[in-house]
Image 1: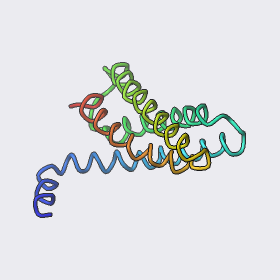
Image 2: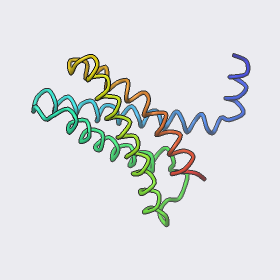
Image 3: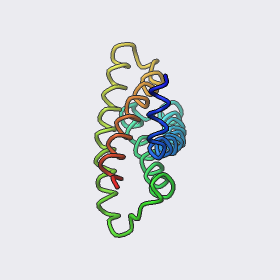
Length: 140
């Protein structure tokens, strides 16, 4: 526990960025789950399509807030097209992971477990997104 505290204090800037990234992620989760719920349970959109549409809406939300707030200390204006391309690529891999996890869990346990599957996918994909975007997309 002492090592963890020491590591966090030595990397305070990274901790702050991770906390901001996480808060943006929570807003994205609200967009993702809210839209998914509406599409799948109210509008009867097939689960795979609903997952993809909701995920893409969350990606747009997250990109906007990450550029404006999480990584706002960096100047992205000259390289915006490159930053956006990298973010989209990381997100496409995240979407693939998301779909695979949701399909695997609902395939094994039934479609009634769609919410559990989606929450599991979100937890796993969050770490992929942070690592990919922190160390590639928004690398200083």
